[in-house]
Image (cartoon, rainbow, N blue to C red; front, side):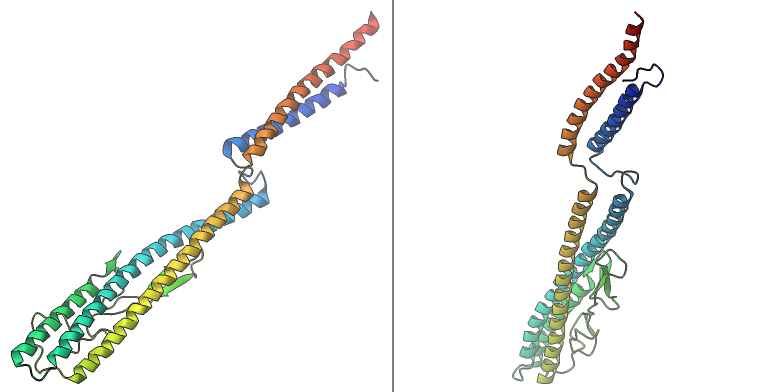
Length: 282
């Protein structure tokens, strides 16, 4: 064994070991305090970049989820109104068929047509009031609804507008002027079976419109379920990449404390070694 009061290799080695233990202990303390094993790019640049990109995707999905919630509200409102219009058309059909009875006097069939017009007016009010967030798929001039369903701008789902105003191409009361009307003055002659046939064609068109809105709503709900699942899975994936294992880190911290205590003892021993030289001069 070489004794020296200059190099003190054992002391330096013990100091280096203590410094290493302190760095490890500080890192474990940071992981426990933050709950993250990768809190910044300096911890692990590759993992941090991956997690950062996944967080960005989830932020975009969050925006898409908001868009889908609004879109679902618009379509649900339009669907409820269109179903109401379809129900009113069933009643209108009954009034119109009854009004074609040639045994009725003019006052009777005109009374039936007054009911027909009032029901049609109600249907038009439903179309006009089917707004959600100032968006209406049933009014005249309504625009198609484009809903963001993914993390990129190109991922959209379009729900077509369904103009259910009288004369708009789907709903057609078959009268001389478009509804709403205040009275039956626009009815100049008793309706015929041809009028009934034309109205039944419009009923079929409205039924198809209701069906399209229902399919659109179902598609949005399916896409929302998928989007929420993607957000949850991505969050779990980020956690697997960057979250600290607190149970393991707690056990590691206990082990480091024991090693530090042993390191302190080793340093004390190393510091005592050069003093042995004094014994040589006694």
